[in-house]
Length: 316
Image (cartoon, helix red, strand yellow):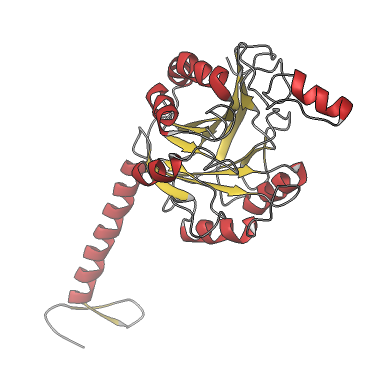
């Protein structure tokens, strides 16, 4: 085609001048899009996430209230998740205690198999969507099992929680397919700059299986429920930070957070005399601190947190 805007190349092909102009404009738009994306994600500091394990009774709540504000500041955490399922008398979480944990600096509270042991949580979880119950709980249960949040630095954060099946009191829906559906809908580094999966179950093997299942698709996979911190904090090959169990925020001069006498009586005699009572000594805050690249969502460093109380200190 010959004309005012036509230009013949060396190999004899003709390129319409209007097409050239369109190509240039399109290239300009593409460059602008790349620059805008870079400006959105190109912060000087990476994403910093703090996760704290099961808050156990009054001792755990006291430790959260007294120490979380300073700990968050010291770590410069962009986002804080706390598992609060044992915070109210060792069984479940009520609305008042949930508010106390949020006031101390938590951005999200996850629950567990004791999610609704405190009856007022049935209504409170509908009012406060920062509280998450397990994803694979009964389909008629109130609340939700995952949510997108916005961190202090503006990053989009996805938090989800799931219950395991092995050795639990009852069989819940398949946790792997439940997690898979949510992760497929929220690609890491795309819709969410950080994804945290709280795996609430008994068996270490099931928690480790979930870690490998989510490797490369989540930023953090961390276990809860067994109340004792494991020494396996690591970054898996696909870039996911993992720990089998974060431990509890509670008094470790106890039997997994309960006063020693009644559990020991039951172990020795096989008979019960009274109810379990949460131990009320000085608590240790136990958890995991992860730094990640908010462009890829992959973890770059992981550190166990043990602050205060009887346990050897870590992450100070």
